[in-house]
Length: 100
Image 1 (cartoon, one colour):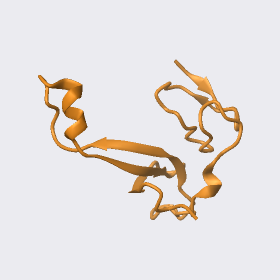
Image 2 (cartoon, rainbow, N blue to C red):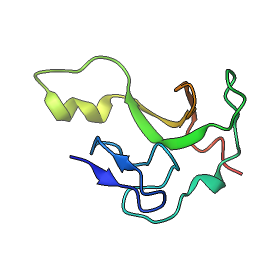
Image 3 (cartoon, rainbow, N blue to C red):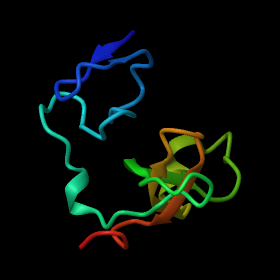
């Protein structure tokens, strides 16, 4: 299912994205929150990367039989995700380290 960005009116075709790829506006809001991050330029295109959101990455393997109970003992790393609008390159930084 798709949604329309309240800031730039771009149609986001995948409902799993919570941030507009075009302007970094959070789903359901009308303005971008990208200004709280220090601009980082793409190493290929030399244009500013767009903040996509903070993602949580699971370390290690899934415990199958124990299911969600085992998730309490697994480390999850939070990383800020930035992407280049021109070439699609994605970069990750420790969560909160790119803020002013």
